[in-house]
Image (tube, rainbow, N blue to C red):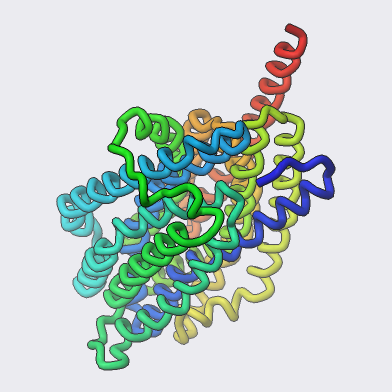
Length: 456
């Protein structure tokens, strides 16, 4: 990271940070994408089982990842304030916290997995696949959480290309493991959808090891001595990260869990409906990685400028990101519309399932517009360390407005399963409008504080 003095310099730096993040996020999402697509090729039951398992796992993972992501604005602020000497300790404490959170999630999963699956009206084989997909995937949670902490540190330094390289190495490894464990190749038994969980867990271990090696041996990371001068666990540092990270995590959880809740509510429909819904949602989630990457880049750039008390520069970065989000929304909608039948065909060859998936994709075109607008704003707010109101906005827009609307439309109109998607559209649109208002308020607040400080 470095200071910029013109719009051209800001755009150049933002693009330099953004594109590696985009490739990283897309590649990470491609792991789930290939889990789903390759499981679908094994059979509709495997696709449905992985869909249910993913719907339970993704909200938990993204919520916890929000806590881990808090280290990014913390490090960005320290860099902006020229307090590099504190960075190593903050990262080590974040690693301790990530391990603790992983253990907690594993314990909760051990207690609740069977009861939660039994609450759903799943076919026996779908239930079995979902359960053991999650169990096998769970063996990679600890290295996954550690890696995401290390990656947040790497990105905060502006070295987003390193994260990109790690994930680009891991992606083909994940595809190879999927090929082996789903279809039973290279001397490995065929596990179907469960094999996707095994493959993903093994990939998590690979990425963690690669990240450790890079941070220990490469410049500029080696200079921080992250793994040679360990400090003892310090609760105050954990609380600092949790103070920022918990609201971020819950905000992300409320957003992602509405999609999981919809999938679970749709478990009352037949296997083809669940599979088509998941296929459409899976591809739309892949496109969402673009605005999400804009948001992460804004957290880094805005956080750096706020740490240096250059509020005007922080605002300009925010405007750049939001403008990009609007363009991306239109681009994503066009991609989904033009290639909707081809996308549906990636997941299954059954004509009826393809037709149903195309219908779901039509609704995805609309809701991703609001999502693409909101994600950059959320990233900018995290750069200001403004996270509590984002949590409230997420809770109200998704769970108080969106999900009840979808449930009502699904159960009391002819929309049926598509009603849930209309509810998602309503919730996301309400959230995007509220987030924009919050960002404008925060920028005005900081501008006033700077003017008052200058006057005094």
